[in-house]
Every structure is written in structure tokens, then in C-alpha cells.
Length: 65
Image (cartoon, rainbow, N blue to C red; front, side):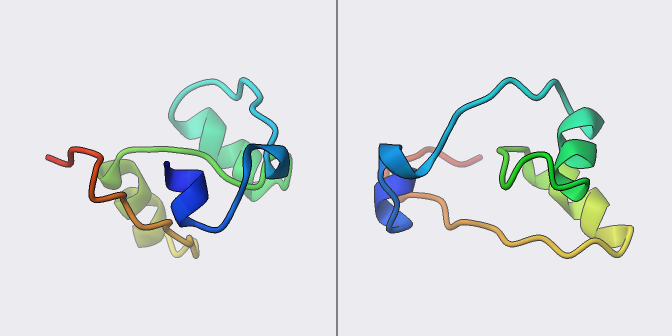
């Protein structure tokens, strides 16, 4: 759903295990991965550190709290 709404197909991505929390962010910043999913609180913390992130919009069909 998120891929389609972002103009991507399953062929455009490769899912890989990347660990949890800070490990995902570190792999992203090191260029080992191109994107990852995280909670808004985590991305806000990284942005407060001065990191630039691009957020994909949430689908209207995905519950947000």
C-alpha cells in the first residue's frame, strides 16, 4: 500500500533485516540501506540531531495514533 502510493512496486525494493532503533538509523546514515520504517518519536529525535530525513506520507488506510 505505501509502496504503491509512493509510486514504487515490489520490484523496486529489497527487504533486509536491519536490527532495531538506533542500529537502523546508523545503517541508513552509513548508506547501507536506503530507507526504513520507524516511529515518529524516533525520527523526530534524529532530526533534532540535525539529520535530514525524507518522510513518505502515511496511507489514509493505515491507522495512525
